[in-house]
Image (cartoon, rainbow over all chains, first blue to last red; front, side):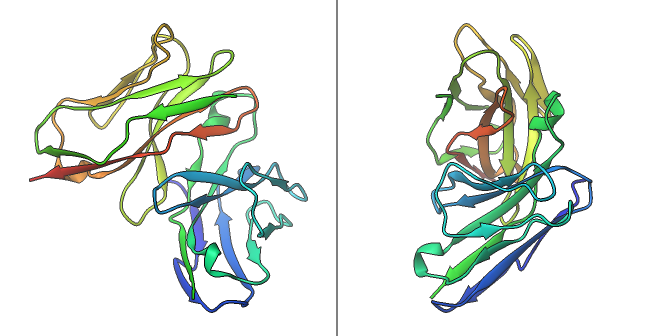
Length: 116
Length: 111
């Protein structure tokens, strides 16, 4: 059973507000990821991290930012939310590379964000 | 670059029907291949995997065989249940340990 948590599960917020989506995992995984999932289900990698103080941008450009101050915690922040940010956001984690286990990502339940 | 192509959905079947969801890939080297499943309101979870040619991954009655000659990893199940209704993602991982997901196939099983 994967132990990766996301809060809130659902968020409706007005344009211009600052929001932080929380993601925590208790598995001690070094790598963590944020994906944006569009209504057509496709997943887009927007941020990832190899460990504490490491953050990288993913394949899809995003106005969001992330931080990794603790191994277990990988929050995503939008400074000024816009309707175009409405989407499902999924957090995931995995062990660091070197074996095939590094390719198995464990996903949280997601946060569905609606910006009005 | 590496890519994954899977059949578009939605796929609608009656309970106890045979399921095939096609997946082909393009990659350099020898990637590992995966099927992930996303049930309604949840995140993705790993369903099965195969790490080398001719490997067969299996779980919960689902199977997929790594076919290097046809660059395919088709998902099959002999008798689907209503509880199998979900979105299925084919994926590959290569040496830089990033996963590339297909676009997902939504499966509806009718009772």
